[in-house]
Length: 145
Image: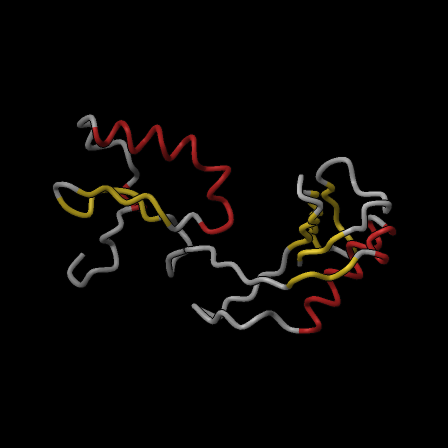
């Protein structure tokens, strides 16, 4: 969700993370005044249609539990983002051909895994054939693999 506080409404000074009724939620104030609230997970392929009214309602309710001022903010937008993953939920890291190395499919852990992935991809590019675990082979779903 993307919310907006008026110029006179208090805003969180930084990112707020919490759990409400067992659900993780985050609230991120942006420099432009926007407040991002997230997130839900709904595996629907590449369906760009906006999430359900119930999911938006839950996010709003949980965010208000964490930061009550949010009840007075304006709802600007509901967005959908994609988090690439593979059918086995493991990343796809390794050589695709002699000139291409893939490093994708980290799902929601992409930011956290960036340093380790970069180190392993660099090692692979410099000739360390064992730099990437075989379980991450990007060609593992091809027939005959």
